Amino acid sequence: MHKIIFLDVDGVLNCQRTWQGEHEDGFATLCPDMCDRLQRVVQETDAIVVLSSTWRLFEGKGLTKLRAWLAERGITIHSHTKDLSMEIGWGNVRACRGDEIALWLEEHASEFPPLEREFVILDDDSDMLPSQKPNFVHTSFKDGLTEAHAKKAIRLLNEND
Ligand SMILES: [Mg+2]
Image (cartoon, rainbow, N blue to C red; front, top):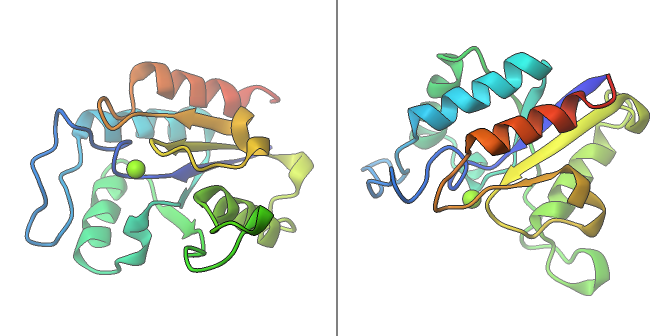
């Protein structure tokens, strides 16, 4: 089974408590505890990480920092979702993050066939598609990625092994 984590950053790898404002590179601090939790999810599931956060749109310092923090934990970013924020999505409304994730899954269906993959979405926003609800681990900006979220992500990714 292929395992895929769609990763948001703000509100997942940092939170209100550890927020220290934006640095001169325009990106907020990451929280080591939360990055460690992500590392555990990756280690226990052998999942790949696909970036769905807006951080993906800013090549350079912020993304370089994120890659370095993840690399320290043995995690590489496989790819990222496409930006559909200017597109019209399902039901004639502005495309949401769920549409971007759905498109990634569709475009990677030969590499990761629907019946041979599990995925989770780690995000503090809630603009996912109804069909993605069972795959959604909804974090909060207040607390970021907690132990309970990490456990849930591991359970969802490994449930059909
Ligand atoms: Mg967020």
